Amino acid sequence: MIRWMIVFCSALLVALPLLGAQAQDRSVRYNFTAEPPSGGSGFASSYSGKKIVSYRTSEKPGTIIVDTDARKLFYVMEGGKAIAYGVGVGRSGFSWSGSAKVGRKAKWPRWTPPAEMIARDPRLSKYANGMPGGPSNPLGARALYLYDGGRDTLYRIHGTNETWSIGRAVSSGCIRMLNEEVIDLYGRVGVGTKVVVL
Picture 1 (cartoon, rainbow, N blue to C red):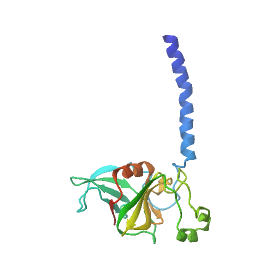
Picture 2: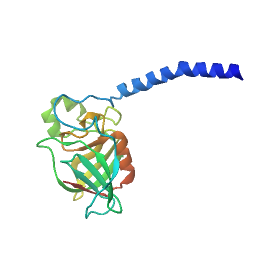
Picture 3: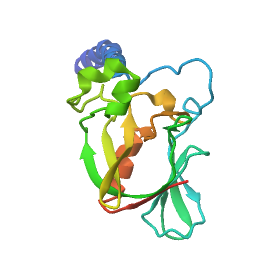
Picture 4: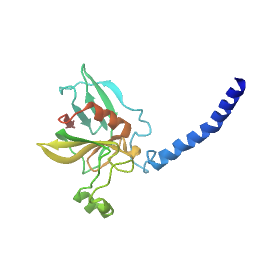
């Protein structure tokens, strides 16, 4: 019995550093630990994750409200509560406000940059026919496609592999979330969910 415990503990001591190295390699390979660019303000490094908060609104439970100034997305719940998530929002000249509905949902969505985005950055032309979903895809793990009057607005609430962008105004108008948090929100909402962007 003692010999078995010594062998087991020795094997465990050898294996633990190897497991840590594998986990570190995975985080680098999938770029979930990106560093922020210099300058600007954001709270990604101090953001501690989603929280249930008191939230007064006339919107019904199940509604998504995005406060672009606060860089927060609120999922309205019963009893004057909401789940608050940190988000990245549209940079100057690309932000928007208004109401929309979730018209479609996708897991590990394909990303196709709009023609206007390719015109601004011709390097994106290689993705004109789309980039398959996956860890390198800028839409991240999940996407909620926002529609107005039955038409795609081209705006999304989606995950990101640029975690430093949470709390910043850097996107082309989409609402970015941490991948683990967009997965949580994705599970809470259905097609037809109302979205209000302030």
